[in-house]
Length: 156
Image (tube, rainbow, N blue to C red; front, side, top):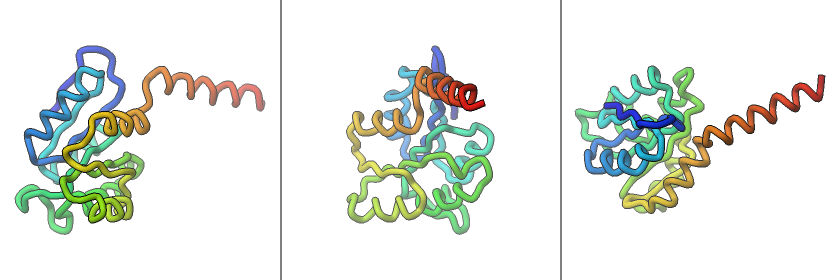
């Protein structure tokens, strides 16, 4: 399911969570801030969304019902590992979101290739900080690109 922002798009966020309440909460947090929100409650669907939509960031739950998983890709950890083997998806940052205790999940999430972990219920400030870190604003991207171009011109 896709939700298009009404103004300029700052980036695409794919939410992979089979809980519609979490999906809706994340939609409400980011849609009005100019992010295109892509949602999936199914790992197989989410992996195809990654290929076709090329999100800038993935927010991934770790627990999925068996009918929402794939053979060998049963949870958010294995889905993260699998994603990082797909061309064009290996560089997409993944943040694991879970209600499990951080001690039990954070190290495993990072080992699977995630860039971070947030415990549900998460503080919106922490989530916004992660999104800003991994999806820079358009003006910051333009400034970075301009800086790169200036470096190139001055070194020639």
